[in-house]
Image (cartoon, rainbow, N blue to C red; front, side, top):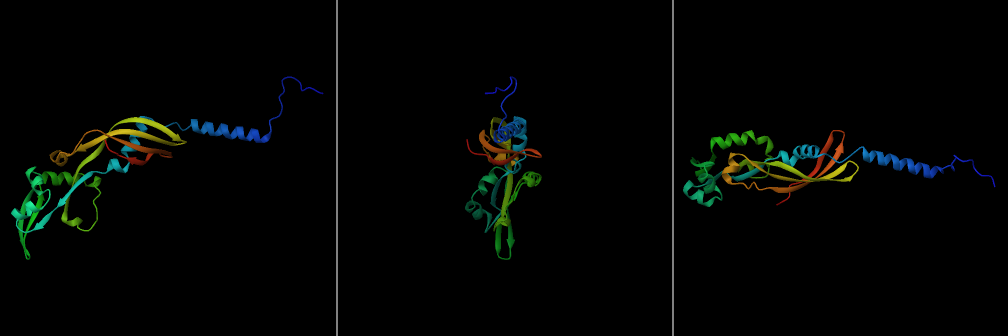
Length: 200
């Protein structure tokens, strides 16, 4: 039997060669897309809709009758007026007296400045409501990042509410909470596909 000269190996079958090449390419592609850094994850989270939107508080803007009776019947009116956020104003209409809740100028201007961050509902009765943006989510730190596939990762983070003056008056809770996000890599970099603010 003829022996093959030393230094030469047996030819590799084509299917095995093809499989090896594909595995190598996939391995190289995986190496070319590492999970996002904490800074990249933070930028993606801050650009997401939940972090651009403000938390809002809504309350009825008017009620029929005199303010003395209307105030006690309307949930939240006494609180808003006692905190100095709004005052009551009584007007006479063709159908009788109406009591209106009027937001203080400071908080009204603040609400206008934050209006681009408040998604106001268009549900029936919305016009008869006062809607004040009171807080926005603030990212505190990235807790962990875990790759879940090629160009896909998950990240846990801590966040808290950042309050404006109305939020401070209303005593919105600012304790730390934990959230979670799914991140995907596209041509523009990492972006948050899904963000859940979660609870404490």
